[in-house]
Image 1: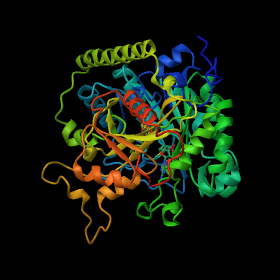
Image 2 (image 1 turned 30 degrees about the vertical axis):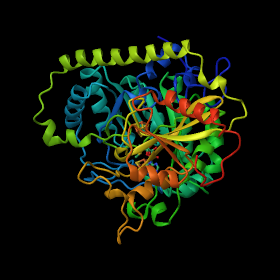
Image 3 (image 1 turned 180 degrees about the horizontal axis):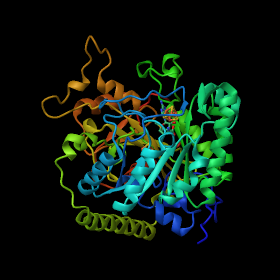
Image 4 (image 1 turned 60 degrees about the vertical axis):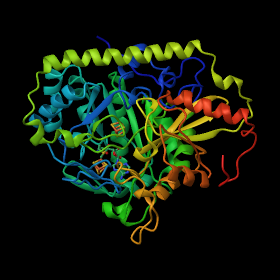
Length: 503
Ligand SMILES: C[S@@+](CC[C@H](N)C(=O)[O-])C[C@H]1O[C@@H](n2cnc3c(N)ncnc32)[C@H](O)[C@@H]1O
Ligand code: SF4
Ligand code: SF4
């Protein structure tokens, strides 16, 4: 059978960026894909912004070694409290991985995708990686498989990947110019030698580009990850976006550099900064003229489990799965019912949306856009302000509502016993958790949540952010647009608001 070649060429009137009521990777943003490819991504939490509210993913940490060094990477084991790529609690053998995957699939039936993303490079550990995939394609046929790689060994494994029924691959491509690459990669390990500097970067870039072409020509979906490193590759990533799109990548995920001295990475120790939220958004917007952008990546650990933004890995440690007895045939039947229910609900929501007159059409075209932060879960305004560990950021404008990204916050209130303590500064911590969280939300004019206490309410208002608990359990986009319309009707969208002025 001839395999389809994936093209990223837009079909029809879809411009860059977002459709009026959609956002990021919502189905409209993927409308350029042929139907059979869209069918593949509709339940993939990383490829569909809509799906990520309902479907879960997991990573298994079977690939410890790496064949290159990135200046931002330091792999860490036995660590349960850090949430960043490369960190894991337990390394697994392929057999252990299969047991864990079956246990998670049975207990979290919304889990649709299994990825191998380290903690090193899966293709630098081919025996462990492909043994895991081989067993999975035979034993858990209802789980989608994907793999994430730096691309150095990709051309040589493209056929093997196609054989194992892996229909999604992520390649990290941070540059297409060796001079820039030399500032990101101190060395690569190639043909039994360590190759440094520009020479090493040149080989890596060539292999990544060859690998990308090899995969798309085999009909395998490719997403490209790029780490945005201000002053190193930020100005160059638009060019990267253009090139990978031309070669058939269907989604580009520009992620912020995470670099702290305590991570022990070169960039962390050199105090290389990551981008601000505004810089990241501006670059994602610039690249979106060329292709679909992913904006909801949570930069997960290499052993993450659950919905994006949550980590349930602690429930599935080796000692716990050892005592779980899973009947996978029965689990598969249950999983199918759950998946079909979610897909029917999404379909019904879409149909209902299409029958309504969009609210944004009643807003003057010159009204200014407004950023809002939402304590959301499952696509609705569901969380108490003090319980949210992240806020979803939406932009409302006369064109509609679009998803911009997420911002991580610290738990301000862990329950009745400690409620309010997060608002108190101490000698050791002169800035309280609440103050830090409010700073994280800067630039937003409204916070939507299901409930909020007096203290945060007052402090948010003082910071020029309007708290709003009136849309509890409402679909997020409807709630954001309703608040925007109220602001419009109250005459508050005429001119840009000066920084620090209350909404
Ligand atoms: C841990 S890697 C594993 C897969 C593979 N080795 C690779 O690099 O693509 C997964 C992703 O996390 C990214 N990553 C690792 N450390 C990071 C950091 N400090 N800041 C931002 N992204 C990071 C990598 O660039 C890659 O896209
Ligand atoms: S390729 Fe991936 S695992 Fe290897 S050093 Fe870079 S980020 Fe880390
Ligand atoms: S790191 Fe990003 S792409 Fe990978 S599983 Fe997490 S959200 Fe999805």
